[in-house]
Length: 257
Image (cartoon, rainbow, N blue to C red; front, side, top):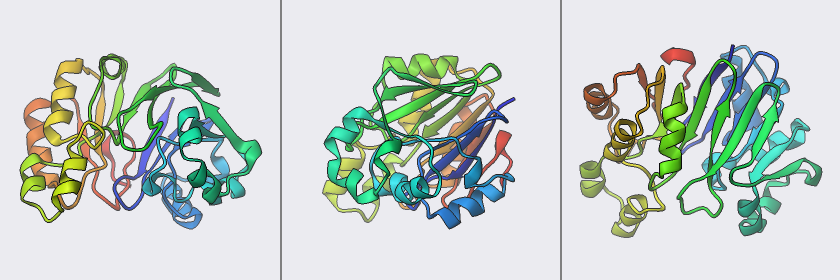
């Protein structure tokens, strides 16, 4: 059996925990180790249980705690090979021990216990950004966050997934009338920005996702509204779903931790 938790999602920090009971991984680490341990404690786990860390991209809310984590826990730190080449200063500033840095290419599969972790490219304004598909005998999980557009490959992965973590960052109207300066608004809704509620729900419909659970993640607390997204999703999504609020964490099948 596989278990998972959204330890945090949003501009202040991101981390996802996935375990098959024998081996455990993190995807992204945007927190201090103390805060990460506090959140892992809600699922009766700690940093000492983590066997590998996978990074989606180099924005601070996803990598802020990677260096400290790597120096506390001597496990492989998987980073996109392209991201490593294009973000050398950021890699250096994190202070990850060189022998723990493990490049991963698009299309490559990394094995952690019975979990096969597949890396695929995403469209975001952080060079080398990726998403991950975790294939396990009991579940197939897909994480898609921080991307401005979707692809046929991602739709195919979603169709095969039983659990989907999908970005729904902003509502078009709330972004348009909101306080952000125009250049930032354009960045958010660009092809290398973020997915809107409408884009996320359209992706769900067109991909043919027929899994057991959807987690809407990386939701803006300035340009979106949790209740609005919940109402929009209720009209379209047939599977149980969770709207993941900022500074909260969530366990399996929607149980708030």
